[in-house]
Image 1: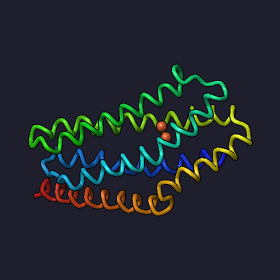
Image 2: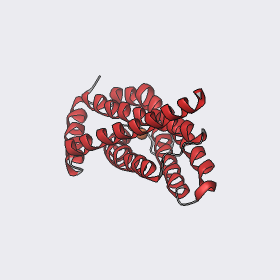
Image 3: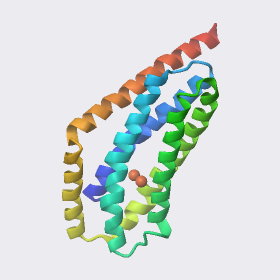
Length: 192
Ligand SMILES: [Fe+2]
Ligand SMILES: [Fe+2]
């Protein structure tokens, strides 16, 4: 597997871990234990800054254009589907953010949008890991790969690189901790 693919797949793993946390978060809130707006603002920040600006931006601005320069179509086929998916995820996150100011009425809206987001992004990651990236490795030359590595480095450095990765790793851990603590309280309440 090429280094660029490994880099993107490592980010997918971190994103997937947060999706697992959000899946539990919805379950906990449905059981009546609200996590609070700070939790959701941190989750939105992770998704917008790490998943979207740090990860999707490398795909949209660097990787997919390289695919399209080598025969893939930007309006039809897998790249077009991936771009549409990214936009749908942004729409879901906007709905989750709106729901935070809408009191009780916002709860169901948030759970629905979070569920759609989790399901959509898990499937999206699966499609990239198993279909699109392998197709890309077949069409990109080693020269392309070297150029992409440099462009990935530049894009990451422009977003504070390692410091940003470290920060969002901690955000992901903090989100998980909060959900697990709330989850334990739900289980205790059920046992009583
Ligand atoms: Fe993507
Ligand atoms: Fe991706």
